[in-house]
Length: 366
Ligand code: MRU
Image (cartoon, rainbow, N blue to C red; front, side, top):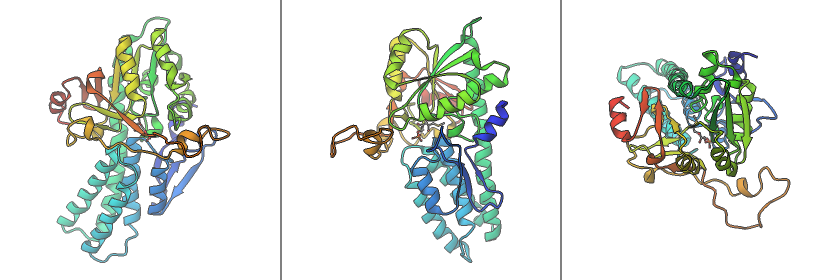
C-alpha cells in the first residue's frame, strides 16, 4: 500500500455521495476493526463527537461544519429568519459536544458567518444551503493544505537531525495524526511529508505514548504510522522519561486543542508532563498548531476550559474487570495545559513561532 492508498483507507471524515450524511471511520473500534459509519441526524453527529468516534481538534471542526451543512439542508423553513433560528440552535447543540478544542467553535462560527453573509447578499435559502456545503468543503480542503505546510516546516527540523545510518528518534503523545485531521495530521505531518520527500519508514523511529486513559497513542497513532510503514514503538506514558534519558529521542512533536494568546497550549492529558521531561533532558519540544487552533481571545492557559470525562474511562474501560473500588472518586481531565516556557517552538502553517509567542503570532497575522 503506498502512502496515498493509506490516506484513502483511513480517511477520517467525508460527505456521503448523496450529501445527506457524514461518512466517518469509527475511531472507537480501531485498530481491530476498520468500519465506516454513516451519521445522518444531529444526534448521531453530536454523539460521534462526544464519544470520540471522530476526534482530534481539526477533525472535530470539519465534522461540525459538515454537520451544519447536512442538517440545515433539511430545515423546512421558508424564510431566512426561521432558517437562522434553527441554524443557531443547531450550532449551540454541536458546540455543547466538547469544550476544549477551539476548532469546533471556530468552524461553527465560520459556518455562521457564511450563512449570514449570504443572507446579507440577498441569496435564496437554496443558495445558502449550497454555500454552506461549499464552506464545509473549504474547511476540509484548507485543513489538508495547513497540515501539509506544518509538515514541510517540521520536516526541515527532521532533516537537521538526520545522521548517516541512524533513524531520527521522535516521540509523540496522543493522536494528532491523519485520524485527527483531513489528511496529514499535525504532529505526524513531518513524518508523512518525509515519506513524500523520499525518506523510508526506517529513516525515522516514532515512539508513541500509549496515552491513558483512552489510548489514542496505542490504538490510533501506532496503527496509522505502522500502516504507513514507519518504524513505530508504543510505550506506556510512564516509560517516556526512560526513553528520553537513554538518548533515543531527538525531537518531540505534539498537537494541540487550543493555544492561548501567550502560547500556553492545551493538549491531551499528559502532554505537559512530556514537556517538563523534555526540558529536563534538553530535547526540543514542538507543538504543531494550525492557526485555527490558536485562540487569541483566550489570554493564557488558565482560561482554557478543560473537559472532564466519565470516571469509567479510568476505572473500567480496557480492563477485564473493574480496577478501582466501586464508588471511588476519580480525576479524569481530558486535557492539560503546557506552559509556553516549556515549548521550543510552535509550528503553524504560516511559519515557526517562538517565545514570546504573541509577537510571532502578530508577525504571521494569526
Ligand atoms: O480527546 P481527543 O482524542 O480528541 O484529543 C486529541 C488531542 O489531544 C490532539 O492532540 C489534538 O486534538 C490535536 S489533533 C491534530
